[in-house]
Image (tube, rainbow, N blue to C red):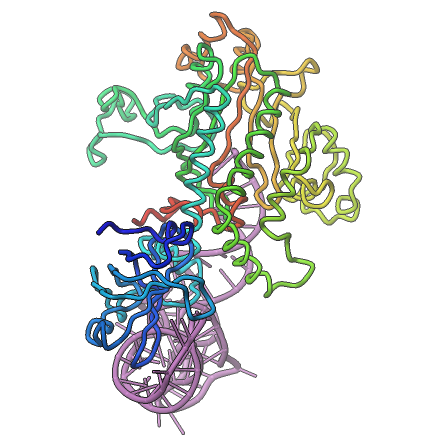
Amino acid sequence: MRRTKIVDILNEEKKGEELLVKGWVRTRRGNKQINFIAVNDGSVIHNLQVVADVEKIGEELLRRVTTGAALAVKGELRESEGKGQSMELLASEIEVIGDCDPNLFPLQPKKHSLEFLRENAHLRFRTNTFSAIARIRHAMIFAVHKFFTDNGFVNIHTPIITSSDAEGAGEMFQVTTLDLKNTPKDDNGAIDFSKDFFGRAANLTVSGQLEGELAAMGLADIYTFGPTFRAENSNTTRHLAEFWMIEPEMAFYDLNDNMDLAERFLKYLISYVLENCTDDLGFLSQRLKDEEKNRKADERSMDLIEKLKFVLSDDFVRITYSEAIEILRNSKPNKKGKFSYKIEGFGADLQSEHERFLVEKHFKKPVILTDYPKDIKAFYMKLNEDNKTVRAMDVLFPQIGEIIGGSQREESYDKLVERMDEMYIPKEEMWWYLDTRKFGAVPHSGFGLGFERMIQFVTGMGNIRDVIPFPRTPKSAEF
RNA sequence: UCCUCAGUAGCUCAGCUGGUUAGAGCGGCGGACUGUUAAUCCGUAGGUCGUAGGUUCAAAUCCUACCUGAGGAGCCA
C-alpha cells in the first residue's frame, strides 16, 4: 500500500478510503479505551488525528507512541466525531517505525523559545514554526526562478571561490590548503600564496556581481542566486556569515529600469507566497498575534498578512538621498534631538534610525533612496553629472531596513579607472572587469537582494537565524 | 567590535538588600477518566544554581575574569 501525504488527505475527497499514513507523533492523549494521536508528516502545517482503540491496537504498542516517534498507520478516513478537525483516521494497524525516548527527546508538546530551538536546529524541522518557514522558503526559491524565467533572464552560477579581493563588500573568509602550522614564506617573510592550491590567495565570494556583469555583457539579462560569505563580526538579528543572495544584472537598463524591476520583483515574491502558502502564513500570522499580546498596544505591529497585502497595494516611494536628508533635517525627532545621530546636511551616512523613520513613520511604506554621495558608495556605481552623487538605489523595508542595494554601473572606462584610483582599488587584478568597458560597453544596472531578509519580512520572523535552517554566525557553526 | 541584559530541574521562570534541607508551572514517569484538542484530575522522580577564582563564620545571592545566549549599535544584504 502506498503512503498518502496528509496534505492530499486534507485537499482531496478521500472519505471512506483505506489509507496508509506515515509521519511523526506530535501528541498522544486519551484514556483506557481510546487514544488520539496527532501525526504530522511535514507536507502541511496541519496534523492528522489518528484514533486508536486501545484494545484493538494494544496498550503495549501505544506506550511506544510518544512525542517524536515515527509511525506508519493504516486505517479508514472518516468524518471526525470531535470538534477540532473535520477528518480523522480510524487506525486498524499502527507500526512504530522509529521509537523516541520521551526522557531524552528535547522537543515537548508545548511552546519552546526560539533560542532553545536554535540550539536544537537538527530537530526544529519537527515544529510548526520551522516547517512553515521551510515550506515558505522553498516556495520563494521557486518564485525567484519563476519570475526571472518568465522575464527572459538567464541564471548564472558565479564562482563561490574567488581570487579577487577588490569587491569591497566586506571581510572575506580565506580558502587555503596550506599547512597553517608551517606556511611557506616569500623573501619578505609574508605567506607565499604562490605555493597554495590556486597559486594565489583565494577567498569565499562576497558577491557574484562582478562576474554577473560579465555575463550580462553578452546575455543581457542574467541573475545569480547563490551562497555568499561575509566574515564580518556582525552580531545582529539581520546578519549572517553565510547567506543567499539574488543578484540580477541587466544590460541597457538605467537606474529607473532597475528600480522598476526591483519593485516588480519584490511584489511578485510577496504575491506568490500569499497565493501559495496560505496555511503556513496563517499559522505564522497567528503566532505573531499571540506574541504581540504581551506587548503594549502602541508597540504592536500590523497583522502579517495585512502587511504583505499593504506592500502590494501601493507604489514604493522613490526619493533621492538629498531629498531624504531634507525630510530628516526638518523632522521632529531631529529638531528635538531624538536621533542619536543628528542630521546636519548633505554627506551624512544614514543610520538605521533614520531609515526606520522614513519608512515606518514618515512615508509608512517601502522607500527607494537614490543618488547617494559617491564617497559612501562602491567604486563601480555610475557617477552623476553633479560629480558628487552616484546612481545608487537602496530599497528600504519596514523592520528589515535595507533589503536591496543596487545601482546603475559606471560603463565609462576612463571614469571607472578614475574612481578605482581614488578608492585604491588594484586595477591589475581587475583587468577582466575593466575589459567589459573597452569592448562594446553599454549602460547596465543590477541589484542584490538578501534572500533571508526577504524571508524575514514575509514570515515576520524577528531574527534572521530562524529563517535559514543552519545559520552561520560569529562563534557559531554547529550542525 | 562596542553598549545593555541574561545564564537556577528536560523547558519557561521565581528565589538574588548573603543565613536551615533551592521552589513553581509545564514536560517525563505511575495512576484515574468512554471522544480528546497544549485534555483534565491525583501522585512521583528530577538540580555541580554557566566556568574559574576571590571576599566572608557562611555565597544561587557580593566582587573579578572568562564562556555562552539575547536585544541594540556599527558594517551591510
